[in-house]
Length: 448
Image (tube, rainbow, N blue to C red):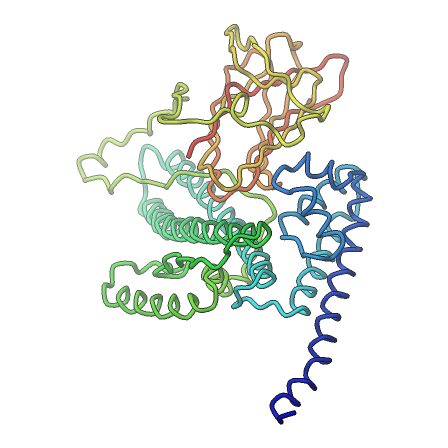
């Protein structure tokens, strides 16, 4: 036996022992999944029926420890456990599972720069966490924009009809901060969209691994933002050239490493900022009029009152939540009825109706849609004094909450779904009484 062959022979037991150790680690995590599946009250076949994105044989491989699942599967499993058991420790359970899952991936050799299946799972996990932080930061920016809009209106009313120099300075400060926030918001939206796209491509590679197809497809990196969220100097061409060159260099390095971490690494500078738990209502860009001339200032007038625009159907192709997409909990008693409804003395033929006073349904979007467009109202059958709370959740985070009563005109709602994996529509009565208000979503549709 040559020295080379002898060296290879000595290494075989060590490699075999390393493989066996990885199998033991994955089997231990599979046992944890079996416990959670038992707590959900679902078999692997029932879970696959409720969540068509996962196949029964694949779920069995997860619970046996043959393969490790994605964080999407673990999130759905935790959702079922919390829904079936009303688990008060759901948040703690999620944190513990997240930590154990990441440690398992690292212990079996996954890296954020690798291209094997487990490394893709790790990159997907970290990417989802980075995406969550972007969404929370975007919610903060939008909330601040809303407050500035209110401050501007209050300043205008307070100083009318004779604005003072102090009030004009205050207006200028509000306008300047609003412009900075608009730039920051646009950068966050761009980063969120780019990262969501890369995570979808990562999921495609993982599906190829599980399906036995060739997973080794090159992933194009998203464009690196030209400035961090808080930057305001966007007119210096030299600075932009330098940032573009730096972004190109980073893209080359990250391409070798796998691609998905382009959005993740860029988020690390923002981890110390304050976060909030809910996604805020999407808010259009703040726009302000130019400074009035001396002649205009001589005869100031209050801004025209805001008018509620009439509902305009979205242009182009739409996908109906009533007829085109089925909710995930198709057999759940909390589901809606699809029926005609009379609201504010007007008939609406296509509605999701909460006839039992409460209803909730979730649709899986797979990050394919741009927005949800709908109207909502309380039927004329509801008693005077009844009120219904309409809630829209995007990826389990409250995005919109509106309370309405009978006799009110339907309210139009548009919700940004860019990068969203799921959307939930829920109605419930604001108070318990002898009668129940009946809430209806009027012809809810998705756009791309």
